[in-house]
Length: 211
Ligand SMILES: Cc1cc2nc3c(=O)[nH]c(=O)nc-3n(C[C@H](O)[C@H](O)[C@H](O)COP(=O)(O)O)c2cc1C
Image 1 (cartoon, rainbow, N blue to C red):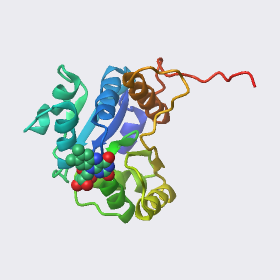
Image 2: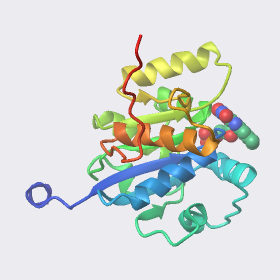
Image 3: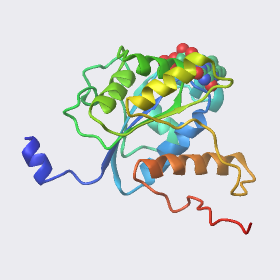
């Protein structure tokens, strides 16, 4: 079957998105909106931790008992590409390296989830899928957020980097003249998508200044 897959690859990218309990639910919301609108993307597998659900409720006012409703709640309209998978479903396709994906991003990534990935702890679907991306040598972007950082956070960030993950802290740039939070969020998400091989038209490109 894999032979057939490589001869006739399914068109469009498959991206895995995790939302854990770090602050910054608006970044997950914007990233999913951009992925849903991107014609190069065929499907998005979404996994949200209970901490992530709490953040979405506290920061965005989204109250979803059933995770299946989450994509629509986040987008504000029916989602065509995003499928939300319960975090306890460790038998989902993305739990196996035999299921092809084009990369995974956890946004926001709590320091707890960062620590679990750094330790190889795979006790839920998000952590297992992250572990799979590392073992298969695929893109794994961890958009963690906290401040200040203790030495455990720093060591965990180094460990995941050594294992092949990309530390992509939620730390937007201020050099492109954004005058509202919305622009900072969009530009940060554009950088994430560019790293996933999905450069966006609205991404700001620095042209340099005269010295
Ligand atoms: C309002 C709120 C904000 C939080 N912000 C952060 C944060 O920015 N970074 C972080 O690592 N944890 C943060 N936490 C704590 C995590 O949500 C918590 O440690 C959780 O257990 C992480 O589990 P998870 O990674 O499985 O979602 C926050 C919690 C709440 C309720």
